[in-house]
Image (tube, rainbow, N blue to C red; front, side):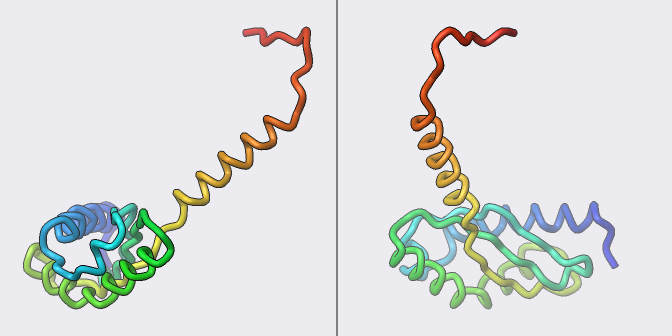
Length: 128
């Protein structure tokens, strides 16, 4: 069982290596359909499973194509990770789409709508 510091280091190393693979090594055209960035990597305590969260910018169709391309390249990514990292066993890799940026943008939009509907009261000043 790995300690939390090691899990954190392996997670950040996987994030860096997969980001480099997305830029230079993965040749699947579907991965280039949308702009992809690795937002987070969750690694299990025994370092056997890695869930890679990606944010994809583009249309719904481009996002779906990109996820298909990433899923088809999981064996390549796992093999490359085993070559680039010195681990006893390379982790099983799973790609998941991260929707947190979209949800955050939607929340900001909703808050702005609420702010616009509330009339400002005159005579109230902010005091520090």
